[in-house]
Amino acid sequence: MKIQNAFPLLVFFLLISFSAQAQKPCCAHGAKKKCDKTDASAKFVAMSEDTAFSEAHTEPESLPEDTEYIGELKLIKVPDGEDARIYEIKSAYKTNRYLFVFHEWWGLNDHIKSESDRWFKNLRDVNVIAIDLYDGKWTKDREKAAELMQSNDSERSLEIIRAAIDYVGKNATIGTIGWCFGGGWSLQAAIEAGDKAAACVVYYGMPEEDTARLSKLEADVLGLFASQDDWINEEVVSTFEQNMEELDKKLIVEWYDAAHAFANPSNPDYDKEAAKAARTQAFDFLTKAYYLKE
Image (cartoon, rainbow, N blue to C red; front, side, top):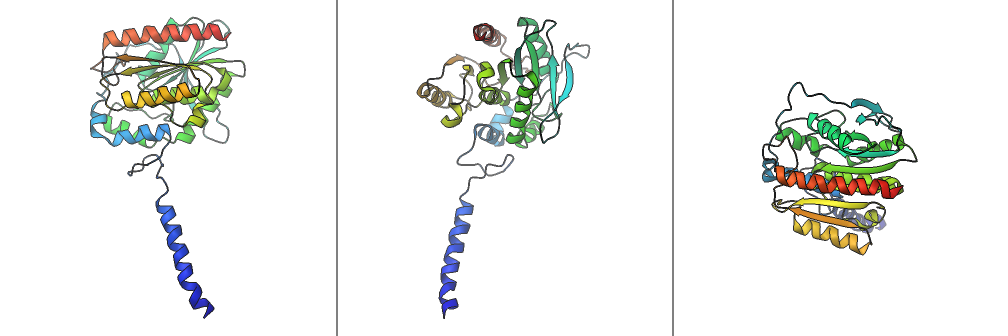
């Protein structure tokens, strides 16, 4: 009798357990079902399932074959993991100033290397490191780019960023910059860098919504957004502004009358005037931050 009486109770607890499991958010990157609650990177990744989002990314044009790059591709150690790839340009003068560059959903391609070279030439006495979050993979194809972004492991990306922070040393002053997928990771890197972070530039990237994590941010942030962007839109940015204000963090927001990915020179829909204005603002912001930090 005791066993028979216990059976319905056992079934009840099993049903409760299965129900709880079913309600857990499906936050694995690349999952087909969207999560109700996700971290910032996973939320941005979910956008790649939107056909309109994919089509908004015009496949990049190739740079001339004779383009020369001044940096060096190298590997850095990741504790308890596979070595990470970076593209590094070192100043001729000894300096502890660094700019971390984060690629779009295409990966660390020639365009990002060229952009890194350009920032190195414009900034004075700053080492530039483009960080590869795709472990050597990159593409010019939209569908493949969506697959790469969906398969990105956020914990692996954080480990790579932490390794880069360790690589530059305890006395480093770090600025971060990124576009689209990389815009969100620029913010994550600034959070990870703590008091080493001098400034963070986010080009139309997904902001962090977790205020507990955002509270760890010590760098000022410049957000450069596009008014014609249907995804990183006014609602998303407004929430970011409110969170930053509540946490007493400094955020400068600038809107440009342009579409998502307007600042990519390899994009056939590149908006030259908006990109130039945004670059000037980012340059002034970074330069001021590097020297005020010292």
